[in-house]
Image 1 (cartoon, one colour):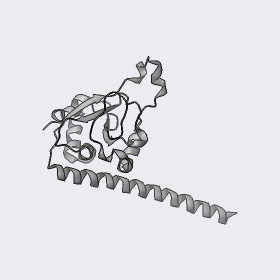
Image 2 (tube, helix red, strand yellow):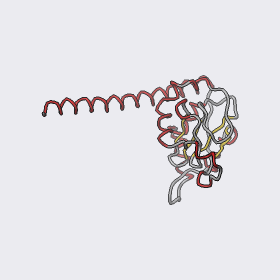
Image 3 (cartoon, rainbow, N blue to C red):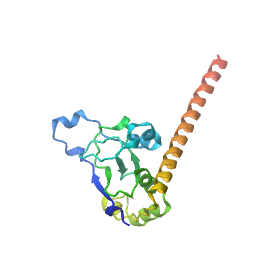
Image 4 (tube, rainbow, N blue to C red):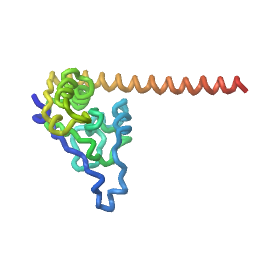
Length: 185
């Protein structure tokens, strides 16, 4: 099954053409926001039970977003809701009852078959960047919903665990450097 059959790809707004005065009151969703959301912030948010999809260019907690620049997908957490999705991102609106959003992120980010399809589609490009047309044509396998939920939840738990381990290592480094600084005086 191709992605376009089960997901609507809604490309973000071109902010360089923003002529509305109220555009300036919003903050744009960024790559850093995506990485924060991908590192498990979504698991702690109320969006864990998200059941709908939002319209417009503003992010809502629980939206699946995809970066065309990094070819990464994530789920918007409470922390990043209300930000404008720019043209470097797309909302992936799931139109099919048999697709779990966490599983979709896992497939787009980690699946060997999806990465292979993306690499083949981007061959010959000077700057390899996934386009909306290429994204829509990617083949995706849909196991049972139970299996999708298990894989998706495990994926985000792994991402959160990795982020926490990285944060712990950084805090330990700061602690050791502070102790060494105290000993050096």
